[in-house]
Amino acid sequence: MGKKVNIKDVAREAGVSTATVSYVINDVNKVNCETRERVKEVIDRLGYQPNINARSLVKKESRIIGIIVPVNEKDKETILLDNPFYLEFLSSAENKARLQGYSTMILSIDEQKVLVRHINSGTLAGIIVLGSANDFVYNTLREVDIPVVVVDQAKTSNKFCYVSTDDEMGAFLATEYLIKNGHKETCFLIGGFEDTLVYKGRLEGYKSALLKYGIEYKPGRVVNIDISYEGGIQAANKVLSLGDDITGIFVMSDIAAMGLIRGFYDRNISVPKDMSVIGFDNIRDSKYFIPQLTTIDQHIGSKADEAVEVIIGINKKDKHIIENIKENNVITIPVNLVERESVVKSNVSKMIC
Image (cartoon, one colour):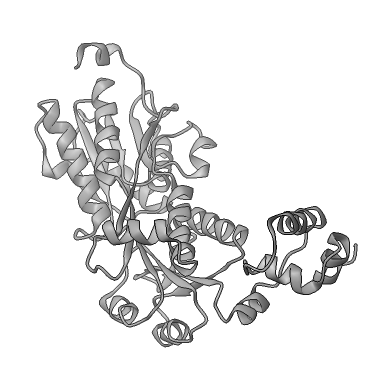
């Protein structure tokens, strides 16, 4: 194993002092452009990794972004393992932060005393709230003097910045796709809290698509399930109990959609031959599943990137980002349909306009 590259190695290779290298790393405006570019080139070539904590001390600022994750209320464990959405978001956020000289720290809502200690420690550059949180968390965050980005929740304060998916459009596209492929008899598998932005948006999108194509909305065909692989498996029986005429199912998340397909498989029901299923998320595993899952891409990586960029931009006093947030502190990520194999194709779409 080779020797770890340090700041002295970079300085020697670039022909400058260690102080100059430090200025470049910490974006201190004391180095001319030519020297700055030369130092950056050497850093990249040698693979030098600055010590983030040391940089924070030098600049008297934090470079750690805290990410608050939800918990599963049933067993008080995080839901990271139940839904890959969270892991993909965290991975993207960590990568985005690292490329800009920051690190991330996962914080759990369930450990309130620890959470408050971290929030008030002065060691965080900002906080991302991923998913639902309780009033205690939001009330605590309103008192801190660092940027807070709330992901996938309705706007409740001008103090925070909000990043979310266009859930209503995504649900509309998913339902419309089923209808255009001949599936007028559908059901929607949904989960979570009914008062959340995600729940309301996706339910409204489902209803809007039915309305556009003159199809009656039947509340009994909106089925609440546990949003997990196991929850999807268990939902198979619920779907089958709704009637023999249902041929298309829109599921609120990919992981539950894959569980549903497994549940159908256990009952000798083939997807898409007997039932068509469409998910929402476009998690990485959806293209490796059999059949490959047709889904709505909510661009998880872009959502994570936006959240991180807001925090870093505010810390760097980026005028463009700060002005945009002042004008509108809600960022909505667009969606698109990803066609794969889990919905049977039909010529009916040619007759629907």
